[in-house]
Image 1 (cartoon, one colour):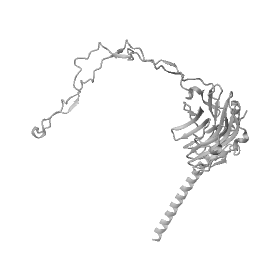
Image 2 (cartoon, one colour; image 1 turned 90 degrees about the vertical axis):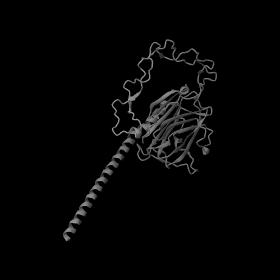
Image 3 (cartoon, helix red, strand yellow; image 1 turned 135 degrees about the vertical axis):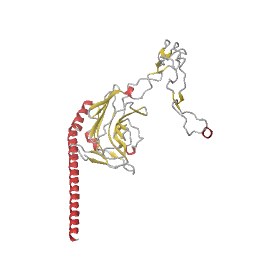
Amino acid sequence: EQLLPESQKVHMIYRTWRSDYGNFVLTAGKFYGDVEKDKGLQTSQDARFYSASSRFESISNKDQPLVIQFTVKHEQNIDCGGGYIKLFPADLNQEEMHGESTYNIMFGPDICGPGTKKVHVIFNYRGNNHLINKDIRCKDDEYTHLYTLVVNPDNTYEVKIDNKKVESGSLEEDWDFLPPKKIKDPDAEKPDDWDEKEHIDDPEDKKPEDWDVAETIPDPDAKKPDDWDDEMDGEWEPPMVTNPDYKGEWKPKQIDNPAYKGKWVHPEIDNPDYTADPEIYQYASMGVIGLDLWQVKSGTIFDNFLITNDPKLAEQVGNETWGATTDPEKKMKDSQEEEERKKRDAEEINKKEEEEDEGEEHEETDSKHKDEL
């Protein structure tokens, strides 16, 4: 079942009434696989917030998978900006949607400089937003990429990029939704006689009698200068040099500690505040999908939004949309770059020819001037 109908993909509400909100345009961009199929919502103004949302019939993912899927294309070679979507409860007022509006799930790429190139997977659970505890790297090139999030009713999840799994696991283990199952026993203490030293000084090892010598000694090869005047210069003292017999601080040899018991591990007990929740995955109301983000450099294209309860359908749709146009898109980009290269080469050749022609003209002028003289 496809929960977000195809016809709703372009039924969007845009928020542009503030000067710091930018406009979306409908375009396939500078390069594409199919000029019609690849048309999507593109951010068009630098250093702007962007807001757009589409309402669909309220749904719940109780006892069924939830799949969120869309494509993102940073053809502007983005330096800093979001590329994620948000899934909102059905009671969201779209006209008032903003960065603090409560959402159910936030999912997608986020890039800012070399340090932030990650896929956000944020769930709202009991009123708080929880970020994933893993680092999922996003794509940072200029091509279109397919992002898919699958949330299963057994509290597991999967993240895919370009229809390939890049991360998966347990909701409870990879997010801090719940208190820990185990906590350190507050009544347990390390025994006073617990010895954690693996090695100790050898009590039989003794420092040699000739060990303690000075670190530096007067240079035995130094001679008082002939012009040294003790009355004027004071008593002459030879410079100090490193003592070749100096061995440093003496330390006894180390032996295994017979009383060593290993590192003391604080015993744990069941956390009385922990209660399992088999419905972490579940949202009772979902009715709006939206873009709510900031971009320093505009040009990102969003397309192929899909919400469904069928992971296989999502994979199929991904292959029919992104999969069908990704290779032609790259070929068009390569062709454009080749044309640009040829254009640059031609301009360089023309520039050199013009410089050579100018040089020849100067030589002819100089020669004519000499003849006249």
